[in-house]
Length: 230
Image (cartoon, rainbow, N blue to C red; front, side, top):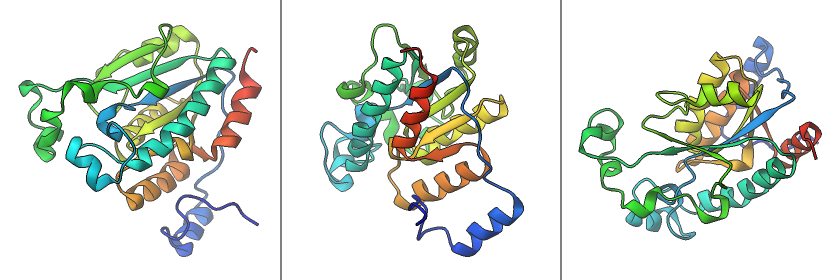
């Protein structure tokens, strides 16, 4: 039996077959030294504790609610795999917003300008260690306006694993930029999240078709354990 994919029941079988017939979705090969990017796993995206999204957005309008907390549990396991294999971890994160950040995305979602300071803290369960690299960013892609590419070159990174949020926003933008820089990208499907079930599923399908490998977490960890220097 074919394993269930996140987009099953949302992307039509006709569309899936069309993409397959056109040759989309060929597998990539994770490199010898992958790095993990933990993208925007801050309280502003999950709220202070697990709760339904309608409650969570009363605290932080940018919260994805309890789906974010489910992903946090999976991201913990992914981080553990990278640490035990001595592979690099980097934390692209949303920088605090001020009045000078008005316009652009903030014009569409003005609530981003009024997030309390606590919202920008990393979720405790996945917070970076001293040796990890933290990269504040002002835009969706972890590459845009940051020194991420320089860090990857310095660390000898040849491929990327992405976790965090949102699937349709910062994860997608980072995956597209990584692909344009010829980095193979792997996305463990349980480790990314979005406020919209449909947007999450559609974007995972599109990413898997064009820009990345999208795999179950267990399969991703098996690949990572093969790359490490335990």
